[in-house]
Image 1: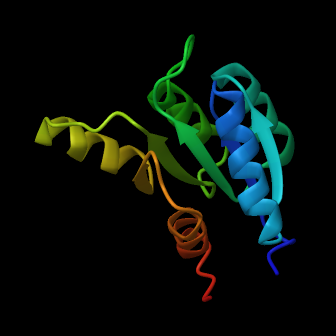
Image 2 (image 1 turned 135 degrees about the horizontal axis):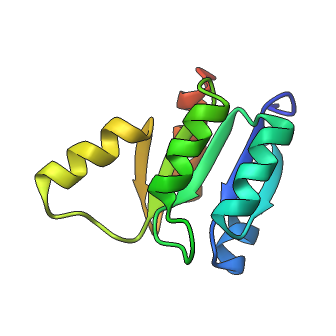
Length: 125
């Protein structure tokens, strides 16, 4: 049971947010949703989530910009980039990995998502 841990899901695709919310809540996490970077930053300022699952490709502020702001507000918050865009450029991939704590490519299984979030929180399954 992970009710003591909070996760913020940031994605401009409503269906993806709902799917991730179901997966995480079923495992006992407290889940907030933001459909864009500005809303995500307001939630982080207010609630300081333990983990943020962050889409890279969003209108307005992209995931990388949001990640930089999250790091300023709450350095302890773990950030997981979650994107369908697979970087082929090795330098770009290294940059992404240096910004966020980890990276998951879409689509991902429920098991992969939960495993990643649990790993960020040092929760053994």
